[in-house]
Image 1 (spheres, rainbow, N blue to C red):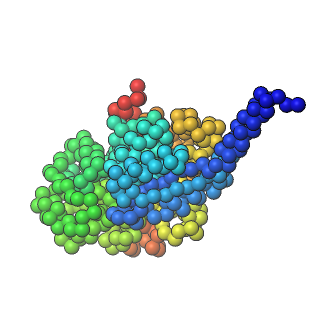
Image 2 (tube, helix red, strand yellow):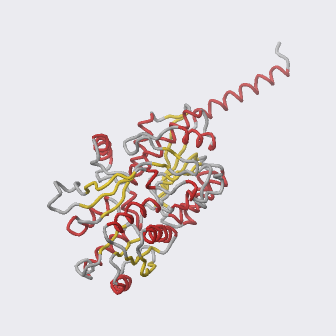
Image 3 (spheres, rainbow, N blue to C red):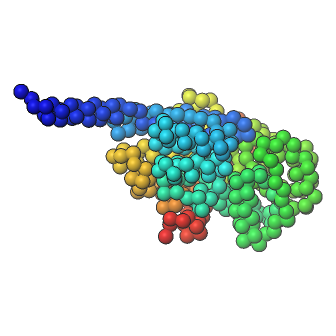
Length: 399
C-alpha cells in the first residue's frame, strides 16, 4: 500500500504537473496602447491589425502558449496611459506593451514598465529622451525619434537655404524635444532661430500663432507638432498666404496619412522624414497589399513599426526560451532586425533601434500616377548618421 508520505508526494507532483499544463495553456499577452481617438486618431488606425499580422506570421504561439493581443486608447493623457499599463502588468500579466504614441504618455508608461520589470517597445512617440535621460534596460525606441527627424528633415532644409527659423510647437514633451533637437541642427549649421510660439495640443485655431510666424520674417516656419495639429497648421497657413509670401513650411513630423488628408495640391513640395514608404521595393509593396486586405488604408511608419517591433520581440522570446524581460531584451539586442520595414537593424544598448531613415518630398499632382503615389525619395540616411551617437545620449545605465 502507498504510505501517507508517498500519497502526499504524488498529490504534490500532480498539482505541480497540472500547474505546468495550465501555465502552458495560459495566453501569452502583449498590448498595444495608443491615442486611438483625438488629435492622433487617424495616424494610429490599423496598428491592431498590423500587430495581429505579426502574431500570425510568427505562428500564433510562443513558448507553447497562444498569443493574445490587448488594445487600449490612452486618449493622449499620461495618467490614463499609466493606469492602463499598471492594470495590464498587475492584473492581466501583459509581458510587453508597444505603440504608446504621445511622448508624455510614453514617458509615464516607461516608468511603470521599469517599476514592474516589464518591456515597453515604443513605436509611436518621438521624444529622444526615451533613449536619453529616460532610457530603460527593458525599454526600446523603435521607429523614429526627434533627433533623426531633426537631422534628416532639418538638415536638408538648412542645406537648401533655410537658415532662419520660427517654430510652431505643440506644448508638451514631444514638441519641446523636437524644437530643441531641430534648433541644435540649425545652429550647428550656422543658421538662426528667430523665435517660436507654443500652442495647445489639438488646437483648432492657428491664426494668432501663424501671424507671429509671418511677422518674424523667418525663411522657415518649423512645425514641431503632428497629426491633426500639423494638418490644420498647414491648411491655415495656406489661407494666410504664407507660402505665397515667400516663407516655407517645414513639417518636422509628417506621415503619409497626413499627406493624403491634405491632398497633393496643398502638400506638394513638403520634405519629410519617414522610416518606411509602401512603394520603396517589392517587399514593402507585398506587405502593404497584405495589410490592405485587413484595413484599406495606406500604412505609414507607425502602422508597420508595431509589426516590426512585435515580430522581433516574439523572435527574441522564442530564442531566449523565457519571457524574463532582461533575458528577452538581451536577445533582442543580439539578433539583427530583419523584416519588410528594416534590414539588418541593430538594437543598441540604450534601446535605440539603429536603421536607415528616408528623406522624401511630396509629389506634385502632375508627378503622381495615382492617389497613393505621393512621395519621391530624395535620400537614404544610414542609421549611424540619422540617430544620436550612444555617447551623447546621457542614458544613465550606459557606461
